[in-house]
Length: 161
Image (cartoon, rainbow, N blue to C red; front, side, top):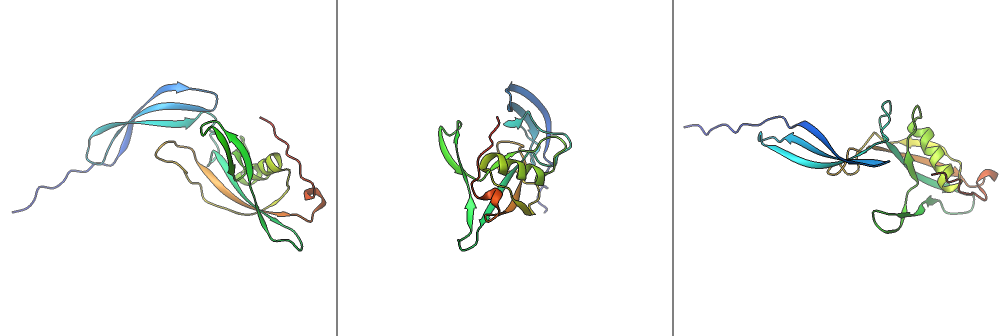
């Protein structure tokens, strides 16, 4: 006697409905079919700023400050994050502009947020940091900063928006 075969379905999205939209983020109700064939819904956050020709929405920068006769330091930034309601210590990061590479965005964001100029030494594949909540994607860019370069002696933030 054979057991009945379990029916499985390739999971797929069937519908996306806009619930709310702001300047940076929108909330959608996503209807999908799960592996058992059941129809389910999920609340999904998405960026309104996604650039069509970019593999990732943004970059995170792991910057290593290297100076003669000093230990290497990882550069972090302190910022107020409204969703958490407090200041957080984080890697410099930002969105990739249209027609901009992840490497160029990383160097631009590093300069804006820290004042440092650096050199890209590595980059990760595109990844999603919170796939249960959003479709936001990022690339981590590794940067070395020559702390002995006169441009990096007294760095000043150049914050925009």
